[in-house]
Amino acid sequence: MADLYMDMGGVTGMRDDKPLRLALAQEYRRKMRRALFLTLPLLLFLIATFIVPIGQLLLRSVHNDDFSRNMPQLSRWFADNTADTAIGEVAFSALVADLILAAKEKTITVVGTRINYDLPGMRSLFTSTARKIGGLTPPFKSALIQMDPRWGDERLWQAMRVASAEYTGDFYLAAADLSRNQKGEIVRTPEERRIYGHLFFRTLMLAAMITGICLILAYPVAHLLATLPMAKSNLLMIFVLLPFWTSLLVRTTAWMVLLQEQGVLNNGLIALGLISDDMRLPLIYNQFGTVIAMTHILLPFMILPIYSVMRPINPSYVRAALSLGASSWTAFRRVYFPQTLPGVAAGVLLVFIMAIGYYITPALVGGASGQLISNMIAYHMQESLNWSLAAALAGILLAGVLILYWLYDRLVGIDNLKLG
Image (cartoon, rainbow, N blue to C red; front, side, top):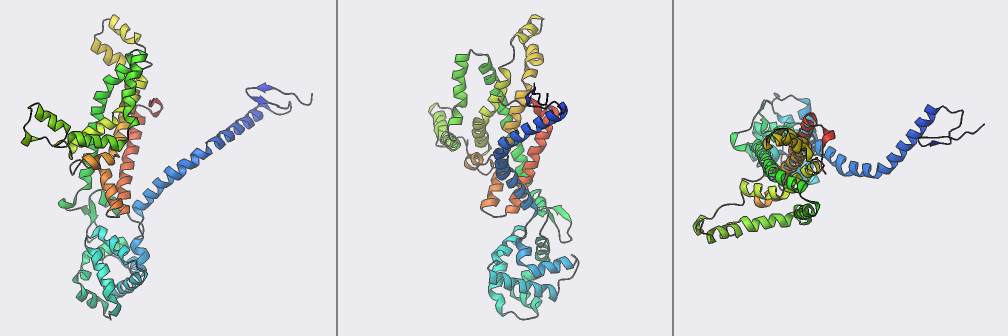
């Protein structure tokens, strides 16, 4: 028989002279190619919209060529001379040549903005000097210092040396409230300029507080959803899902109406005689407003993972524990609660990660004391235009999220993640 067709686990049309192992391997590769082609559009979409932007963000946090690209001669002088080299006429000649070129190319504001990241107020120095430098004659060192004494400041030259490096880790230093002194040593920034460490700490504390409140509120609601008859459970589930059908901006604005000093809650307390009109409670534009609004928004993300784990739990387990003499608390603690841990851990992880990256709600209801690190990232992206520092702050936040995933995998196991 020249052709013998067989059907073994999807392998058909196999000739009798072909080894079975080879035929199965070929069939497996064919199925893998088919699966790859089916998932290729999604893979390309994820690469284009997720992987590439994150890669660009991480690259931007260590790469900034605004100064080196527009001040090539001075950057070359910095590369050829060590930090302890005296700033002489050669360095000032390179500076003047680059300033003339930058003014001609209309990139002087880019150069000044880059130095302004490290030394506030220096952008005006570069722009004003560029307007006057056309008629400058040697010796350039004395002429520039006479024009503006700040050109002789060692801190300015140290900042330009740092900025001349196309790749640098100084933005991560700034994000950690660190800087370099005139000798290039890493030191703490002055007390009045340490803001990012405090913001990171506040973000983590508020996110932990919101996660804890969501867990306390969500666990009994999820238990009620899991134990009620299906008709009543579905009705209650509609109220849980209702926030998903309402715009985030609308929900946040509603809390602004409720919590402001002339809002519904304060007016209600005054009507009940609990507070006087001149003692209205400051419930918004502070941390309290941020916690309340974000808890309301993130609560469904805690309820649903816990509910998805509670629903399949057989109630006979708890009844068996009670029949064997265990108290209600013991039965809950040793029988019921351990079975809900995957959902609890998933809900905590999901809510905490979403909380540390929230931007709109803290911006609207947080005020000065309720702002999170995400609001500072947005400030540097939109206002100060220090994208490299914003990328460094976002990179630290991303590293924190990855550490949380790693801890979850170590403690619970990523295979036990239950989200629905």
